[in-house]
Structures are given as C-alpha cells and as structure tokens.
Image 1 (spheres, one colour):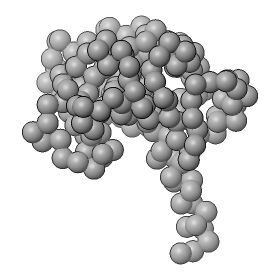
Image 2 (spheres, one colour):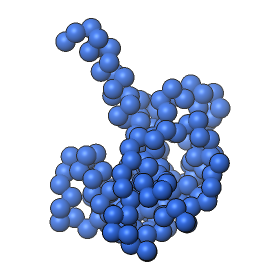
Image 3 (tube, helix red, strand yellow):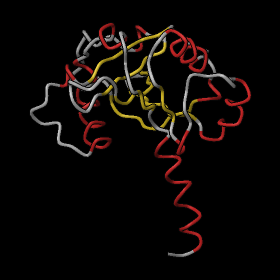
Image 4 (cartoon, rainbow, N blue to C red):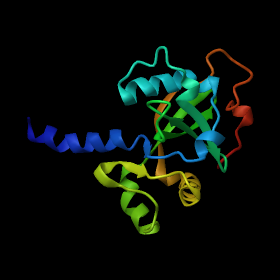
Length: 177
C-alpha cells in the first residue's frame, strides 16, 4: 500500500463513520417516532448500505421511523425489530430533494470544548449515544440548530410518486435561516 493510501484510509473511514449517529437505545423516542411510507425507499437503501443486508421482505415500518425534535428531522433505523437501538440520520427536504446530513468531522474539537460533559461517546471516530433520553435530546436540539456542525452527506429524490400525504414536502417545512 502506498504512503498516500495509508494516509487517506483513516480519513476515508472518518468521513464514512460520521454519516450516522449510533444509538444504543432509542428509549421512548421509538414509540413517539412514526413510520413514514414516504421515507421507506430511502430507509431500504440505507438499510442495505449500512447493515449490508437485503431489505426485501422486511417490514420497514418496524425498522425505520421518523422523529422530529424542535423542527429537526431524524430517521431512526434498526437492523432488527427486536433491537433497542440502531442508527440515526438527520435529514431535511428541500425542493423535493431528501438531504441527509452528517456531522462535520472537523468540528470535533469545537464540540468537545463547547460540550465537555455531553452524553456522547466519540470513540473510533464515531458518534455514539447510549440513550435518547432528555439530556441527549436537548443536546441534539442544540447541535441541530448550529449549521456549522452539519453538512449534506447525500441527496436523493424524496417524493417520486408525488404523494400528497408525504409530510416533509417543502410546503410543510419552516424556513430555518
């Protein structure tokens, strides 16, 4: 392996691992979050790419839910319906495009300085939460409001069938800036 490749490998791993937030226990948030048929295909794609498993035949309403905290949207994704936790992705919909965000890796030092007692683990270049409890939800709300912590990781067409029931269409979103 060349020296350049050895230098880029950790950077690539960092970028990939920061795209989602690992959650050990969704706690009561899972019950508050709702299955969303408009996000099903996106959830299936994430399920396939993140868990390396075929989602065909899986009931995605039991594996993927959408949760909103203080106007910021998150997709919760379990590997198996019996799991207590899984992965969490912040998203928004702008002009019909589903935008999945990731935490900006270069903001780690700033985060550690601003939130020294945050209920979060930053081991192995991942963001891991033990539980979606009140202190963690408060932190997510505060961080979500700070645009410098987030960048677009992926974009895809949101409402391919033009379903009027899709609740994240632009007409439903509040201007955040």
